[in-house]
Image (tube, rainbow over all chains, first blue to last red):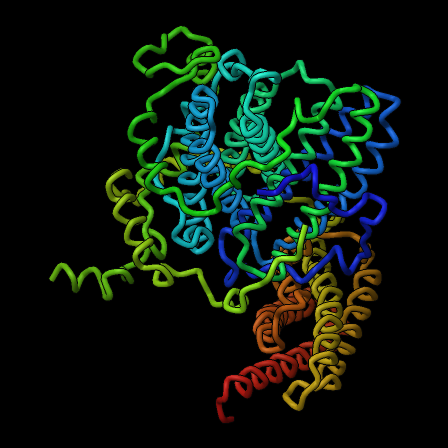
Length: 399
Length: 230
Protein backbone atom coordinates (compact mmCIF):
# COMPACT_ATOMS: atom_id res chain seq x y z
CA UNK A 1 0.00 0.00 0.00
CA UNK A 2 0.98 3.61 -0.47
CA UNK A 3 3.25 4.95 2.30
CA UNK A 4 2.43 8.65 2.36
CA UNK A 5 5.28 9.56 4.67
CA UNK A 6 7.79 8.36 2.06
CA UNK A 7 6.02 9.57 -1.07
CA UNK A 8 6.95 13.13 -2.00
CA UNK A 9 4.04 13.87 -4.26
CA UNK A 10 4.07 17.19 -6.11
CA UNK A 11 5.01 20.25 -4.02
CA UNK A 12 2.21 22.81 -3.58
CA UNK A 13 4.06 25.52 -5.53
CA UNK A 14 4.30 23.25 -8.58
CA UNK A 15 0.56 22.52 -8.67
CA UNK A 16 -0.59 24.63 -11.59
CA UNK A 17 -3.41 24.74 -14.11
CA UNK A 18 -4.62 26.60 -17.17
CA UNK A 19 -8.25 26.81 -18.30
CA UNK A 20 -7.91 24.22 -21.04
CA UNK A 21 -6.21 21.81 -18.66
CA UNK A 22 -8.95 22.39 -16.09
CA UNK A 23 -11.86 22.11 -18.54
CA UNK A 24 -11.43 18.83 -20.41
CA UNK A 25 -13.71 17.08 -22.87
CA UNK A 26 -16.19 15.45 -20.46
CA UNK A 27 -16.92 11.78 -19.98
CA UNK A 28 -19.62 10.08 -22.05
CA UNK A 29 -22.98 9.48 -20.40
CA UNK A 30 -23.58 6.56 -22.76
CA UNK A 31 -20.18 4.91 -23.02
CA UNK A 32 -18.25 5.50 -19.79
CA UNK A 33 -18.63 2.99 -17.00
CA UNK A 34 -21.15 4.04 -14.33
CA UNK A 35 -18.42 3.60 -11.74
CA UNK A 36 -16.29 6.25 -13.47
CA UNK A 37 -19.20 8.65 -13.00
CA UNK A 38 -19.57 7.50 -9.38
CA UNK A 39 -15.90 8.31 -8.74
CA UNK A 40 -16.18 11.73 -10.40
CA UNK A 41 -19.17 12.64 -8.27
CA UNK A 42 -17.63 11.43 -5.03
CA UNK A 43 -14.36 13.26 -5.69
CA UNK A 44 -16.24 16.46 -6.45
CA UNK A 45 -17.83 16.03 -3.03
CA UNK A 46 -14.49 15.34 -1.38
CA UNK A 47 -13.02 18.53 -2.86
CA UNK A 48 -16.11 20.57 -1.99
CA UNK A 49 -15.74 19.34 1.56
CA UNK A 50 -12.06 20.30 1.60
CA UNK A 51 -13.00 23.85 0.61
CA UNK A 52 -15.87 24.04 3.09
CA UNK A 53 -13.80 22.73 5.98
CA UNK A 54 -10.84 24.95 5.19
CA UNK A 55 -13.08 28.01 4.94
CA UNK A 56 -14.51 27.19 8.38
CA UNK A 57 -10.96 26.99 9.77
CA UNK A 58 -10.04 30.32 8.17
CA UNK A 59 -12.98 32.00 9.88
CA UNK A 60 -11.72 30.80 13.25
CA UNK A 61 -7.94 31.09 12.94
CA UNK A 62 -6.00 34.13 11.78
CA UNK A 63 -2.54 32.49 11.74
CA UNK A 64 -3.58 29.74 9.35
CA UNK A 65 -5.39 31.97 6.86
CA UNK A 66 -2.65 32.29 4.24
CA UNK A 67 -1.68 28.63 4.37
CA UNK A 68 -5.33 27.66 4.05
CA UNK A 69 -5.88 30.06 1.16
CA UNK A 70 -2.91 28.60 -0.72
CA UNK A 71 -4.07 25.00 -0.44
CA UNK A 72 -7.69 25.94 -1.00
CA UNK A 73 -6.93 27.64 -4.32
CA UNK A 74 -5.53 24.40 -5.69
CA UNK A 75 -8.37 22.32 -4.21
CA UNK A 76 -10.87 24.58 -5.96
CA UNK A 77 -9.17 24.08 -9.31
CA UNK A 78 -8.99 20.34 -8.70
CA UNK A 79 -12.70 20.32 -7.94
CA UNK A 80 -13.39 22.19 -11.16
CA UNK A 81 -11.37 19.75 -13.24
CA UNK A 82 -13.17 16.80 -11.64
CA UNK A 83 -16.71 18.16 -11.69
CA UNK A 84 -16.43 19.45 -15.25
CA UNK A 85 -15.89 15.86 -16.37
CA UNK A 86 -19.66 15.44 -16.15
CA UNK A 87 -21.20 15.98 -19.59
CA UNK A 88 -23.88 18.50 -20.61
CA UNK A 89 -26.30 15.78 -21.71
CA UNK A 90 -26.46 14.40 -18.16
CA UNK A 91 -29.65 16.06 -16.91
CA UNK A 92 -30.10 17.15 -13.27
CA UNK A 93 -32.40 14.15 -12.67
CA UNK A 94 -29.94 11.75 -14.29
CA UNK A 95 -27.18 13.27 -12.17
CA UNK A 96 -29.41 12.71 -9.15
CA UNK A 97 -29.66 9.01 -10.00
CA UNK A 98 -25.88 8.94 -10.22
CA UNK A 99 -25.57 10.75 -6.85
CA UNK A 100 -27.73 8.09 -5.20
CA UNK A 101 -25.63 5.38 -6.84
CA UNK A 102 -22.60 7.01 -5.20
CA UNK A 103 -24.40 7.00 -1.86
CA UNK A 104 -25.37 3.33 -2.15
CA UNK A 105 -22.20 1.78 -3.55
CA UNK A 106 -19.69 3.88 -1.60
CA UNK A 107 -21.59 3.54 1.69
CA UNK A 108 -21.92 -0.22 1.13
CA UNK A 109 -18.17 -0.54 0.66
CA UNK A 110 -17.50 1.63 3.71
CA UNK A 111 -20.00 -0.31 5.87
CA UNK A 112 -18.32 -3.61 5.02
CA UNK A 113 -14.80 -2.39 5.78
CA UNK A 114 -15.55 -0.28 8.86
CA UNK A 115 -13.75 -1.87 11.83
CA UNK A 116 -15.96 -0.26 14.50
CA UNK A 117 -19.27 -2.15 14.74
CA UNK A 118 -21.28 0.85 15.95
CA UNK A 119 -20.01 3.00 13.07
CA UNK A 120 -20.71 0.18 10.60
CA UNK A 121 -24.28 0.06 11.94
CA UNK A 122 -24.65 3.80 11.32
CA UNK A 123 -23.49 3.36 7.72
CA UNK A 124 -25.90 0.48 7.14
CA UNK A 125 -28.68 2.61 8.61
CA UNK A 126 -27.92 5.50 6.23
CA UNK A 127 -27.44 3.13 3.30
CA UNK A 128 -31.04 1.87 3.39
CA UNK A 129 -32.31 5.43 3.30
CA UNK A 130 -30.31 6.44 0.23
CA UNK A 131 -31.35 3.13 -1.29
CA UNK A 132 -34.97 4.21 -0.97
CA UNK A 133 -34.19 7.62 -2.49
CA UNK A 134 -32.93 5.81 -5.59
CA UNK A 135 -36.29 4.06 -5.89
CA UNK A 136 -38.27 7.30 -5.49
CA UNK A 137 -36.14 9.28 -7.97
CA UNK A 138 -36.29 6.40 -10.46
CA UNK A 139 -40.09 6.45 -10.22
CA UNK A 140 -40.02 10.21 -10.85
CA UNK A 141 -37.74 9.77 -13.85
CA UNK A 142 -39.94 7.05 -15.32
CA UNK A 143 -43.27 8.74 -14.65
CA UNK A 144 -42.31 12.36 -15.36
CA UNK A 145 -39.76 11.99 -18.18
CA UNK A 146 -40.49 8.50 -19.51
CA UNK A 147 -36.88 7.49 -18.90
CA UNK A 148 -35.18 4.43 -17.43
CA UNK A 149 -32.81 5.06 -14.51
CA UNK A 150 -30.94 1.85 -15.25
CA UNK A 151 -29.43 3.49 -18.33
CA UNK A 152 -27.43 5.51 -15.78
CA UNK A 153 -26.98 2.72 -13.23
CA UNK A 154 -25.84 0.16 -15.85
CA UNK A 155 -27.25 -2.83 -13.90
CA UNK A 156 -24.92 -2.34 -10.93
CA UNK A 157 -27.48 -1.01 -8.45
CA UNK A 158 -30.96 -2.16 -7.46
CA UNK A 159 -34.06 -0.01 -7.86
CA UNK A 160 -36.53 -1.08 -5.16
CA UNK A 161 -37.91 0.27 -1.91
CA UNK A 162 -35.66 0.62 1.12
CA UNK A 163 -36.59 2.24 4.44
CA UNK A 164 -39.47 4.39 3.20
CA UNK A 165 -38.36 7.99 2.76
CA UNK A 166 -41.58 9.13 4.46
CA UNK A 167 -40.43 7.55 7.75
CA UNK A 168 -36.85 8.80 7.48
CA UNK A 169 -37.81 12.23 8.84
CA UNK A 170 -36.47 12.45 12.38
CA UNK A 171 -36.21 15.02 15.11
CA UNK A 172 -32.64 16.40 15.43
CA UNK A 173 -32.08 14.54 18.71
CA UNK A 174 -32.47 11.26 16.85
CA UNK A 175 -29.97 12.20 14.13
CA UNK A 176 -26.86 12.67 16.26
CA UNK A 177 -24.52 9.69 16.64
CA UNK A 178 -21.65 8.85 18.94
CA UNK A 179 -18.33 10.11 17.63
CA UNK A 180 -15.15 8.11 17.26
CA UNK A 181 -12.42 8.60 19.84
CA UNK A 182 -9.54 10.43 18.14
CA UNK A 183 -6.94 8.64 20.28
CA UNK A 184 -8.18 5.09 19.88
CA UNK A 185 -10.08 5.01 16.59
CA UNK A 186 -8.63 3.05 13.69
CA UNK A 187 -7.40 5.35 10.90
CA UNK A 188 -9.94 3.80 8.54
CA UNK A 189 -12.77 4.82 10.89
CA UNK A 190 -11.65 8.45 10.63
CA UNK A 191 -11.27 8.31 6.84
CA UNK A 192 -14.72 6.77 6.45
CA UNK A 193 -16.41 9.45 8.54
CA UNK A 194 -14.75 12.27 6.59
CA UNK A 195 -15.65 10.62 3.26
CA UNK A 196 -19.32 10.02 4.03
CA UNK A 197 -19.78 13.49 5.51
CA UNK A 198 -18.36 14.96 2.31
CA UNK A 199 -20.51 12.80 0.06
CA UNK A 200 -23.75 13.53 1.85
CA UNK A 201 -23.15 17.25 2.11
CA UNK A 202 -22.55 17.62 -1.61
CA UNK A 203 -25.73 15.63 -2.23
CA UNK A 204 -27.68 17.98 0.00
CA UNK A 205 -26.17 21.04 -1.66
CA UNK A 206 -26.79 19.64 -5.14
CA UNK A 207 -30.47 18.95 -4.45
CA UNK A 208 -30.87 22.40 -2.94
CA UNK A 209 -29.39 23.90 -6.11
CA UNK A 210 -31.30 21.91 -8.71
CA UNK A 211 -34.62 21.37 -6.87
CA UNK A 212 -36.02 24.73 -8.04
CA UNK A 213 -35.00 23.99 -11.63
CA UNK A 214 -37.80 21.45 -11.95
CA UNK A 215 -41.15 22.59 -13.35
CA UNK A 216 -43.27 19.72 -12.05
CA UNK A 217 -44.72 20.50 -8.58
CA UNK A 218 -44.34 16.89 -7.45
CA UNK A 219 -40.67 16.87 -8.49
CA UNK A 220 -40.15 20.11 -6.57
CA UNK A 221 -41.78 18.55 -3.51
CA UNK A 222 -39.72 15.36 -3.83
CA UNK A 223 -36.45 17.30 -3.99
CA UNK A 224 -37.55 19.36 -0.98
CA UNK A 225 -38.29 16.17 0.94
CA UNK A 226 -35.13 14.27 0.05
CA UNK A 227 -32.88 17.33 0.52
CA UNK A 228 -34.25 17.47 4.07
CA UNK A 229 -33.14 13.85 4.64
CA UNK A 230 -29.73 14.61 3.16
CA UNK A 231 -29.37 17.40 5.73
CA UNK A 232 -30.17 14.81 8.40
CA UNK A 233 -27.50 12.56 6.92
CA UNK A 234 -24.92 15.34 7.08
CA UNK A 235 -25.91 15.87 10.72
CA UNK A 236 -25.54 12.15 11.34
CA UNK A 237 -22.20 11.61 9.63
CA UNK A 238 -20.49 14.79 10.82
CA UNK A 239 -21.46 13.91 14.41
CA UNK A 240 -19.26 10.81 14.03
CA UNK A 241 -16.18 13.06 13.80
CA UNK A 242 -14.43 13.65 17.14
CA UNK A 243 -14.95 17.33 18.07
CA UNK A 244 -11.90 17.10 20.33
CA UNK A 245 -9.50 17.01 17.38
CA UNK A 246 -7.49 20.20 16.99
CA UNK A 247 -8.01 22.26 13.87
CA UNK A 248 -4.66 21.19 12.42
CA UNK A 249 -5.35 17.59 13.31
CA UNK A 250 -8.60 17.80 11.36
CA UNK A 251 -6.94 19.52 8.42
CA UNK A 252 -4.26 16.84 8.28
CA UNK A 253 -6.88 14.07 8.41
CA UNK A 254 -8.87 15.72 5.62
CA UNK A 255 -5.78 15.81 3.41
CA UNK A 256 -5.16 12.12 4.11
CA UNK A 257 -8.79 11.40 3.27
CA UNK A 258 -8.29 13.14 -0.07
CA UNK A 259 -5.19 11.05 -0.83
CA UNK A 260 -7.07 7.91 0.23
CA UNK A 261 -10.03 8.67 -1.99
CA UNK A 262 -8.04 9.63 -5.09
CA UNK A 263 -5.90 6.55 -4.52
CA UNK A 264 -9.04 4.37 -4.33
CA UNK A 265 -10.28 5.88 -7.60
CA UNK A 266 -6.91 5.20 -9.21
CA UNK A 267 -7.05 1.52 -8.28
CA UNK A 268 -10.37 0.97 -10.05
CA UNK A 269 -10.43 3.46 -12.94
CA UNK A 270 -10.91 1.96 -16.41
CA UNK A 271 -10.87 5.15 -18.50
CA UNK A 272 -7.19 6.05 -19.09
CA UNK A 273 -7.98 9.73 -19.61
CA UNK A 274 -9.60 9.91 -16.18
CA UNK A 275 -7.06 7.62 -14.57
CA UNK A 276 -4.29 10.09 -15.34
CA UNK A 277 -6.25 12.77 -13.46
CA UNK A 278 -6.62 10.55 -10.38
CA UNK A 279 -2.90 9.82 -10.51
CA UNK A 280 -1.97 13.49 -10.78
CA UNK A 281 -4.27 14.40 -7.90
CA UNK A 282 -2.96 11.65 -5.60
CA UNK A 283 0.37 13.40 -6.03
CA UNK A 284 -1.15 16.85 -5.48
CA UNK A 285 -2.81 15.66 -2.27
CA UNK A 286 0.43 14.12 -1.02
CA UNK A 287 1.94 17.57 -1.62
CA UNK A 288 -0.85 19.14 0.46
CA UNK A 289 -0.30 16.55 3.17
CA UNK A 290 3.39 17.43 3.49
CA UNK A 291 2.59 21.15 3.47
CA UNK A 292 0.10 20.74 6.33
CA UNK A 293 2.34 18.24 8.10
CA UNK A 294 5.12 20.87 8.36
CA UNK A 295 2.74 23.40 9.88
CA UNK A 296 1.33 20.75 12.22
CA UNK A 297 4.73 19.60 13.48
CA UNK A 298 5.95 23.16 14.02
CA UNK A 299 2.76 24.26 15.76
CA UNK A 300 1.69 21.23 17.79
CA UNK A 301 5.14 19.64 18.24
CA UNK A 302 3.64 16.17 17.90
CA UNK A 303 4.47 13.23 15.73
CA UNK A 304 1.91 12.81 12.94
CA UNK A 305 1.97 9.04 13.29
CA UNK A 306 -0.14 9.50 16.43
CA UNK A 307 -2.89 10.88 14.25
CA UNK A 308 -2.86 9.69 10.68
CA UNK A 309 -2.12 6.37 8.99
CA UNK A 310 1.20 6.50 7.19
CA UNK A 311 0.28 3.50 5.10
CA UNK A 312 -3.12 3.80 3.45
CA UNK A 313 -5.76 1.16 4.28
CA UNK A 314 -7.56 -0.94 1.66
CA UNK A 315 -9.20 1.30 -0.96
CA UNK A 316 -12.92 1.89 -1.32
CA UNK A 317 -14.33 -0.78 -3.65
CA UNK A 318 -15.93 0.57 -6.78
CA UNK A 319 -18.08 -2.37 -7.67
CA UNK A 320 -21.65 -3.59 -7.17
CA UNK A 321 -22.68 -4.51 -3.62
CA UNK A 322 -26.04 -6.06 -4.48
CA UNK A 323 -25.86 -9.09 -2.19
CA UNK A 324 -24.70 -7.07 0.82
CA UNK A 325 -27.33 -4.38 0.32
CA UNK A 326 -30.14 -6.92 -0.03
CA UNK A 327 -28.98 -8.70 3.10
CA UNK A 328 -28.99 -5.41 5.05
CA UNK A 329 -32.36 -4.57 3.54
CA UNK A 330 -33.89 -7.80 4.78
CA UNK A 331 -32.48 -7.61 8.27
CA UNK A 332 -32.42 -3.87 9.07
CA UNK A 333 -35.06 -2.07 7.04
CA UNK A 334 -37.34 -1.78 10.07
CA UNK A 335 -34.76 -0.12 12.33
CA UNK A 336 -35.46 3.37 13.62
CA UNK A 337 -33.21 5.81 15.50
CA UNK A 338 -33.66 6.65 19.14
CA UNK A 339 -31.08 9.14 20.31
CA UNK A 340 -27.71 7.80 19.15
CA UNK A 341 -28.94 4.20 19.09
CA UNK A 342 -31.06 2.08 16.76
CA UNK A 343 -34.25 0.26 17.76
CA UNK A 344 -36.85 -1.92 15.98
CA UNK A 345 -39.79 0.13 14.75
CA UNK A 346 -42.07 -1.77 17.15
CA UNK A 347 -40.25 -0.02 20.02
CA UNK A 348 -40.67 3.46 18.61
CA UNK A 349 -43.17 5.31 20.80
CA UNK A 350 -46.06 7.12 19.15
CA UNK A 351 -45.29 10.30 21.09
CA UNK A 352 -41.52 10.21 20.42
CA UNK A 353 -40.08 13.45 19.00
CA UNK A 354 -39.36 11.86 15.61
CA UNK A 355 -42.83 10.35 15.20
CA UNK A 356 -44.45 13.67 16.07
CA UNK A 357 -42.07 15.51 13.75
CA UNK A 358 -42.70 13.30 10.71
CA UNK A 359 -46.45 13.10 11.32
CA UNK A 360 -46.54 16.88 11.11
CA UNK A 361 -44.35 17.02 7.96
CA UNK A 362 -46.36 14.33 6.17
CA UNK A 363 -49.75 15.63 7.31
CA UNK A 364 -50.72 16.77 3.79
CA UNK A 365 -49.22 13.76 2.04
CA UNK A 366 -45.73 12.48 1.38
CA UNK A 367 -44.21 13.33 -2.01
CA UNK A 368 -41.98 10.23 -1.93
CA UNK A 369 -44.96 7.93 -1.25
CA UNK A 370 -47.06 9.60 -3.93
CA UNK A 371 -44.42 9.62 -6.68
CA UNK A 372 -43.70 5.90 -6.28
CA UNK A 373 -47.21 4.63 -5.48
CA UNK A 374 -47.39 1.13 -6.95
CA UNK A 375 -44.06 1.58 -8.71
CA UNK A 376 -42.12 -1.46 -9.75
CA UNK A 377 -38.97 -0.94 -11.81
CA UNK A 378 -39.01 -2.50 -15.25
CA UNK A 379 -36.28 -2.36 -17.94
CA UNK A 380 -37.34 0.18 -20.53
CA UNK A 381 -39.74 1.92 -18.08
CA UNK A 382 -43.05 0.72 -16.67
CA UNK A 383 -44.70 1.51 -20.02
CA UNK A 384 -42.55 -0.99 -21.95
CA UNK A 385 -44.08 -4.12 -23.44
CA UNK A 386 -40.97 -5.96 -24.55
CA UNK A 387 -38.86 -7.79 -21.99
CA UNK A 388 -35.43 -7.75 -23.64
CA UNK A 389 -34.10 -10.27 -21.10
CA UNK A 390 -36.73 -12.80 -22.19
CA UNK A 391 -35.79 -12.21 -25.81
CA UNK A 392 -39.29 -11.24 -26.96
CA UNK A 393 -42.63 -9.70 -26.14
CA UNK A 394 -44.13 -10.58 -22.77
CA UNK A 395 -47.46 -11.38 -24.37
CA UNK A 396 -45.85 -13.98 -26.58
CA UNK A 397 -44.19 -15.49 -23.56
CA UNK A 398 -47.52 -15.86 -21.78
CA UNK A 399 -49.14 -17.38 -24.83
CA UNK B 1 4.22 8.01 -6.82
CA UNK B 2 5.29 6.19 -9.98
CA UNK B 3 3.36 6.57 -13.21
CA UNK B 4 0.81 3.79 -13.72
CA UNK B 5 0.55 1.84 -16.94
CA UNK B 6 -2.67 1.84 -18.91
CA UNK B 7 -4.11 -1.34 -20.28
CA UNK B 8 -4.88 -0.92 -23.99
CA UNK B 9 -8.18 -2.76 -23.73
CA UNK B 10 -9.35 -0.17 -21.21
CA UNK B 11 -9.41 2.46 -23.92
CA UNK B 12 -12.18 0.66 -25.80
CA UNK B 13 -15.51 2.42 -25.38
CA UNK B 14 -18.98 1.11 -26.14
CA UNK B 15 -22.54 2.04 -25.27
CA UNK B 16 -23.35 0.66 -21.81
CA UNK B 17 -26.88 1.94 -21.26
CA UNK B 18 -29.07 -1.09 -22.02
CA UNK B 19 -29.80 -4.19 -19.98
CA UNK B 20 -28.36 -6.43 -22.68
CA UNK B 21 -24.88 -5.06 -22.03
CA UNK B 22 -24.83 -7.25 -18.90
CA UNK B 23 -27.84 -9.60 -19.06
CA UNK B 24 -26.76 -11.61 -16.02
CA UNK B 25 -26.57 -8.51 -13.86
CA UNK B 26 -29.86 -7.26 -15.28
CA UNK B 27 -31.50 -10.59 -14.50
CA UNK B 28 -30.33 -10.29 -10.88
CA UNK B 29 -31.74 -6.78 -10.78
CA UNK B 30 -35.14 -7.78 -12.15
CA UNK B 31 -35.44 -10.81 -9.86
CA UNK B 32 -34.72 -8.64 -6.83
CA UNK B 33 -37.12 -5.97 -8.02
CA UNK B 34 -39.91 -8.52 -8.36
CA UNK B 35 -39.24 -9.87 -4.89
CA UNK B 36 -38.97 -6.58 -3.02
CA UNK B 37 -41.26 -4.14 -4.86
CA UNK B 38 -45.01 -3.58 -4.59
CA UNK B 39 -47.44 -4.97 -7.14
CA UNK B 40 -47.22 -2.71 -10.21
CA UNK B 41 -49.92 -0.09 -10.28
CA UNK B 42 -49.92 2.52 -13.02
CA UNK B 43 -52.61 4.69 -11.45
CA UNK B 44 -51.16 8.10 -10.61
CA UNK B 45 -54.22 9.86 -9.29
CA UNK B 46 -52.46 10.94 -6.07
CA UNK B 47 -49.71 12.59 -8.10
CA UNK B 48 -52.35 14.27 -10.21
CA UNK B 49 -53.98 15.63 -7.04
CA UNK B 50 -50.70 17.25 -5.94
CA UNK B 51 -50.26 18.84 -9.36
CA UNK B 52 -53.89 19.98 -9.38
CA UNK B 53 -53.35 21.94 -6.16
CA UNK B 54 -50.66 24.03 -7.81
CA UNK B 55 -52.40 24.36 -11.19
CA UNK B 56 -55.55 25.56 -9.41
CA UNK B 57 -53.67 28.44 -7.84
CA UNK B 58 -53.75 29.91 -11.34
CA UNK B 59 -50.61 32.04 -11.09
CA UNK B 60 -49.19 32.81 -14.56
CA UNK B 61 -45.57 32.42 -15.65
CA UNK B 62 -45.62 36.17 -16.33
CA UNK B 63 -47.76 38.96 -17.74
CA UNK B 64 -48.36 40.07 -21.29
CA UNK B 65 -47.11 43.54 -22.35
CA UNK B 66 -49.23 46.33 -20.86
CA UNK B 67 -51.71 47.83 -23.36
CA UNK B 68 -55.39 48.81 -23.26
CA UNK B 69 -56.23 46.52 -26.19
CA UNK B 70 -56.25 42.80 -25.32
CA UNK B 71 -55.82 41.84 -29.00
CA UNK B 72 -52.75 44.03 -29.23
CA UNK B 73 -51.38 42.49 -25.98
CA UNK B 74 -51.79 39.01 -27.48
CA UNK B 75 -50.11 40.15 -30.70
CA UNK B 76 -47.19 41.73 -28.84
CA UNK B 77 -46.78 38.51 -26.86
CA UNK B 78 -46.52 36.53 -30.10
CA UNK B 79 -44.24 39.11 -31.72
CA UNK B 80 -41.98 39.03 -28.65
CA UNK B 81 -41.80 35.26 -28.89
CA UNK B 82 -40.81 35.36 -32.57
CA UNK B 83 -38.24 38.05 -31.89
CA UNK B 84 -36.65 35.96 -29.14
CA UNK B 85 -36.77 32.86 -31.32
CA UNK B 86 -35.12 34.57 -34.30
CA UNK B 87 -32.48 36.14 -32.04
CA UNK B 88 -31.62 32.70 -30.61
CA UNK B 89 -31.86 31.29 -34.14
CA UNK B 90 -29.00 33.55 -35.25
CA UNK B 91 -26.86 32.21 -32.38
CA UNK B 92 -27.95 28.66 -33.17
CA UNK B 93 -26.74 28.97 -36.77
CA UNK B 94 -23.57 30.78 -35.59
CA UNK B 95 -22.76 27.72 -33.48
CA UNK B 96 -23.45 25.33 -36.34
CA UNK B 97 -21.35 27.42 -38.75
CA UNK B 98 -18.42 27.23 -36.33
CA UNK B 99 -18.80 23.47 -36.07
CA UNK B 100 -19.14 23.08 -39.84
CA UNK B 101 -15.95 25.11 -40.35
CA UNK B 102 -13.98 22.88 -37.97
CA UNK B 103 -15.38 19.62 -39.32
CA UNK B 104 -14.30 20.36 -42.86
CA UNK B 105 -15.62 18.11 -45.58
CA UNK B 106 -17.72 18.06 -48.71
CA UNK B 107 -21.05 17.08 -47.11
CA UNK B 108 -23.95 19.51 -47.13
CA UNK B 109 -24.74 21.95 -45.68
CA UNK B 110 -21.75 24.08 -46.57
CA UNK B 111 -20.71 27.02 -44.43
CA UNK B 112 -22.15 29.31 -47.13
CA UNK B 113 -25.54 27.51 -46.99
CA UNK B 114 -25.69 28.04 -43.24
CA UNK B 115 -24.52 31.65 -43.44
CA UNK B 116 -27.31 32.42 -45.88
CA UNK B 117 -29.95 31.17 -43.43
CA UNK B 118 -28.25 32.83 -40.47
CA UNK B 119 -28.30 36.21 -42.25
CA UNK B 120 -31.99 35.86 -43.02
CA UNK B 121 -32.75 35.00 -39.39
CA UNK B 122 -30.95 38.21 -38.43
CA UNK B 123 -33.00 40.22 -40.94
CA UNK B 124 -36.20 38.72 -39.49
CA UNK B 125 -35.07 39.63 -36.02
CA UNK B 126 -34.48 43.27 -37.05
CA UNK B 127 -37.82 43.39 -38.83
CA UNK B 128 -39.59 42.15 -35.68
CA UNK B 129 -37.79 44.73 -33.52
CA UNK B 130 -39.01 47.48 -35.82
CA UNK B 131 -42.54 46.09 -35.94
CA UNK B 132 -42.82 45.84 -32.13
CA UNK B 133 -41.45 49.35 -31.64
CA UNK B 134 -43.80 50.64 -34.34
CA UNK B 135 -46.79 49.18 -32.50
CA UNK B 136 -45.72 50.95 -29.29
CA UNK B 137 -44.24 47.82 -27.71
CA UNK B 138 -40.85 47.29 -26.05
CA UNK B 139 -38.64 44.96 -28.11
CA UNK B 140 -36.40 44.34 -25.07
CA UNK B 141 -39.25 42.96 -22.92
CA UNK B 142 -39.46 39.19 -22.42
CA UNK B 143 -43.08 38.29 -23.06
CA UNK B 144 -44.59 35.15 -21.50
CA UNK B 145 -44.58 33.30 -24.82
CA UNK B 146 -40.99 34.39 -25.49
CA UNK B 147 -40.05 32.92 -22.13
CA UNK B 148 -41.83 29.64 -22.85
CA UNK B 149 -40.15 29.49 -26.26
CA UNK B 150 -36.82 30.06 -24.54
CA UNK B 151 -37.47 27.08 -22.29
CA UNK B 152 -38.37 24.99 -25.35
CA UNK B 153 -35.21 26.04 -27.15
CA UNK B 154 -32.90 25.15 -24.25
CA UNK B 155 -32.39 21.62 -25.50
CA UNK B 156 -31.89 22.72 -29.10
CA UNK B 157 -29.15 25.18 -28.17
CA UNK B 158 -27.52 22.62 -25.91
CA UNK B 159 -27.33 20.03 -28.67
CA UNK B 160 -25.69 22.41 -31.13
CA UNK B 161 -23.29 23.93 -28.58
CA UNK B 162 -21.96 20.56 -27.41
CA UNK B 163 -18.59 20.03 -29.11
CA UNK B 164 -19.24 16.27 -29.16
CA UNK B 165 -22.36 16.40 -31.36
CA UNK B 166 -22.11 15.84 -35.11
CA UNK B 167 -23.50 18.06 -37.88
CA UNK B 168 -26.07 15.39 -38.52
CA UNK B 169 -27.25 15.42 -34.86
CA UNK B 170 -27.32 19.23 -34.90
CA UNK B 171 -29.51 19.24 -38.02
CA UNK B 172 -32.10 17.14 -36.17
CA UNK B 173 -32.15 19.81 -33.46
CA UNK B 174 -32.36 22.62 -36.01
CA UNK B 175 -35.21 20.85 -37.79
CA UNK B 176 -37.21 21.07 -34.56
CA UNK B 177 -36.61 24.81 -34.45
CA UNK B 178 -37.44 25.36 -38.12
CA UNK B 179 -40.69 23.34 -37.91
CA UNK B 180 -41.90 25.40 -34.96
CA UNK B 181 -40.74 28.61 -36.55
CA UNK B 182 -42.63 27.90 -39.76
CA UNK B 183 -45.95 27.28 -38.06
CA UNK B 184 -45.54 30.22 -35.72
CA UNK B 185 -44.81 32.64 -38.57
CA UNK B 186 -47.99 31.42 -40.23
CA UNK B 187 -50.06 32.13 -37.10
CA UNK B 188 -48.41 35.51 -36.66
CA UNK B 189 -49.14 36.49 -40.25
CA UNK B 190 -52.83 35.68 -39.81
CA UNK B 191 -53.01 37.70 -36.61
CA UNK B 192 -51.44 40.69 -38.37
CA UNK B 193 -53.92 40.44 -41.22
CA UNK B 194 -56.87 40.14 -38.82
CA UNK B 195 -55.77 43.32 -37.09
CA UNK B 196 -55.48 45.15 -40.40
CA UNK B 197 -51.72 45.65 -40.15
CA UNK B 198 -51.30 45.16 -43.87
CA UNK B 199 -47.91 46.82 -44.36
CA UNK B 200 -46.28 44.67 -41.72
CA UNK B 201 -48.17 41.61 -42.94
CA UNK B 202 -46.61 41.99 -46.37
CA UNK B 203 -43.13 41.85 -44.87
CA UNK B 204 -44.17 38.90 -42.75
CA UNK B 205 -45.32 37.02 -45.83
CA UNK B 206 -41.83 37.41 -47.26
CA UNK B 207 -40.29 36.18 -44.00
CA UNK B 208 -42.60 33.16 -43.96
CA UNK B 209 -41.55 32.27 -47.51
CA UNK B 210 -37.90 32.44 -46.45
CA UNK B 211 -38.59 30.31 -43.38
CA UNK B 212 -40.32 27.74 -45.60
CA UNK B 213 -37.20 27.66 -47.72
CA UNK B 214 -35.05 27.12 -44.59
CA UNK B 215 -37.23 24.20 -43.59
CA UNK B 216 -37.03 22.64 -47.05
CA UNK B 217 -33.26 22.94 -47.03
CA UNK B 218 -32.85 21.42 -43.55
CA UNK B 219 -35.19 18.56 -44.48
CA UNK B 220 -33.19 17.99 -47.65
CA UNK B 221 -29.87 17.87 -45.79
CA UNK B 222 -31.26 15.37 -43.31
CA UNK B 223 -32.57 13.19 -46.16
CA UNK B 224 -29.21 13.42 -47.90
CA UNK B 225 -27.35 12.62 -44.68
CA UNK B 226 -29.64 9.63 -44.11
CA UNK B 227 -28.81 8.30 -47.58
CA UNK B 228 -32.31 8.89 -48.94
CA UNK B 229 -32.42 9.75 -52.64
CA UNK B 230 -34.44 12.88 -53.46
